[in-house]
Length: 320
Image: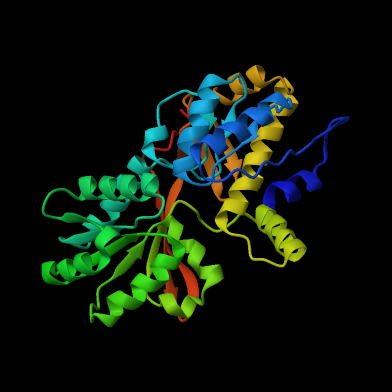
């Protein structure tokens, strides 16, 4: 929806119309490959790809094979990092995100339980492992929720000082209720993925939960565009909608500068530069990996998501 809306905002680049070709493959790897190749055969200049890490890995393989580049929406596993394979993204990789989250948690806690869900394991397990590594042995303990009952009993026995949940939005709702039902009055943190739960379920269900995110408050211009998107589809946009509009802006900039030949656009995207995007500034290196200028900490208070802190990212490239 966001890509359609973005193209309708700007249907031409100069005198040339912009055509959005849509494929709807399943999550099956072969279905993903076939969709990529159909778009390639139809003359796509670029493929706007995956929202999850599992399919992002497949699309990155196709981009490596093809001259047609791919721009992922929110696939963030570090298995995609440093590959220079024609797969680009504005989301920060799980290794970087995990190290930043660990640095935050270390300020207040000596024992943190990191719980990873079974959905989208390419993301949940990669981020969980990165947080546990950053916390270090004895300070961060990693638990897989594949056997949920057993794991939650172990967490209760281990008596951590805080919990960090990396689970799907629906699992977050259920787990927060279960954890509180067990009498654990611990600080609960969630990854970015959990923020999807707030437009779907009442924020009252997440009172007190903190979300560590690479997304701040949308800049005014993007906020206005997201409101128009919401009015058009009668649905509150998630942060992936802001990503989609940001990605389109970057792609349009490339199309204006070098045209629609895929190899030229790919070379343009592979040139390291800093872009403005929905939440501020993002730097993309030559391998297609990203660094955001800030990290953000939110908490649900009285049924509202409140920004607690904006934390500068020391790894963000600064102008000399």
